[in-house]
Length: 316
Image (cartoon, rainbow, N blue to C red; front, side, top):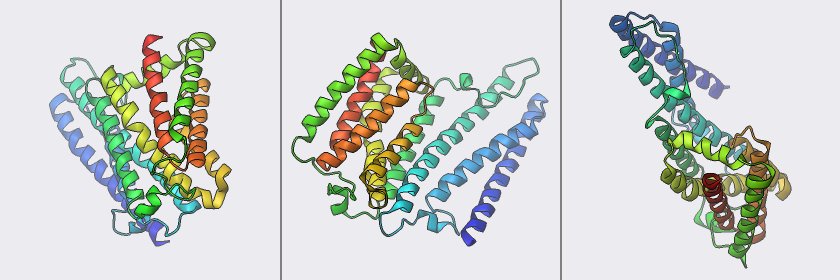
């Protein structure tokens, strides 16, 4: 009960501070441009303060909420769910906070450069040009990395490396794990080619265009981040830490299914084909993790999948 009260009080405090800050910014805008936008700006800054509160609460960095940052002693359902839920909250709320910051910046910019009555623009993505999308996704990547390290901070080295189904499985794969990942990668490439050029022309381009929005068309940045960084922390979170925590309670099938559903949800898309691709990738990586007692083959397959999407999307 105490933690619930502390959560509510801290949440109200952060939101109130955001609203007060919004009032100060509104005063500046009103004195400079003659526009009274108190409600809109207070709402924006109050929401932004709320996002920072959620992130700090997830890491247990606020008095009265320290327990949120304390992992259950044993791997189990509660720990597995918290790893996944916290990951979603930290990444999404950090992205929202940074987007809000840039929205405020561009809103003031528009007021400074318009001679007509300006309207409230909210979080219009078309205004987030230049470095804003890049900064947004970079902060999200840092948050994801921080959450991954936070979740593993009390895990012993043996449990990190060991390939047992209730361990993180960062060690070398058994037998022909890398060969299996290479074969799976070839099958993934064939599947993407079929989808792109035969079944549904342009489906991969949808994913590339989405990446292009975040990275402002910088293909080099898309390639480096999506191929070499994203697969590592995603595999550690989904097929490593959360899978290991859920497996003792849900079994191999249950842990595979739940982590894959969360994996698909995280990669939100309006395309059924892309959702099915993501689900297939998640389930295949679960199988590789179980079969070869390591998440490394899954990391390789994940890297190859992202690389195929970027390259074929550009060709197509």
